[in-house]
Length: 114
Length: 112
Image (tube, rainbow over all chains, first blue to last red; front, side, top):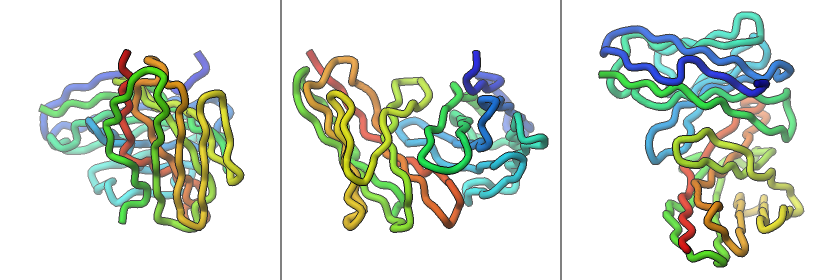
């Protein structure tokens, strides 16, 4: 499968725990995006990378959130001290650099904080 | 004003109907525009890009009005399989060098 893959698909955690999600983009894609989506809403931008450089972070991304893409390939999104409000679908997407290019999404990681 | 705003929906239409969705964006520097489709509990997938001169793909027609900062999607002869949420997406550059901003989406239900 050469699409965007995310792991895990589902995560249930207790409030206050830390969680980490992984995204493997399509191999030749330079850009990698993280989004959060809750029921009835469109995906909300969190952050994106061009290669290993994190170019922008949303105001939604509090200091409990951190994302990395150390070698410009896979990326991780960590949430520390999870809160119930963090419960959502976390989507990763990748695209070729610049231009009017399609972003391909992974199937997402559904986080439930209890 | 939100960066990308869409008709709230839901749109409930019979098979064969024509339905139109609207979207406005706030940043006049926006460069690229897309419509994505998202099925229930699935990831978003590109439906079509939107070009300045307007473009058509089968039963789907997309229009862009830069002066009004407005994008539309027209679906003709709607099918049951068109039932989904349609997301308007804007690539805002050069400020953020390629950030994709999504609208909240408009839900379409096509009934027999």
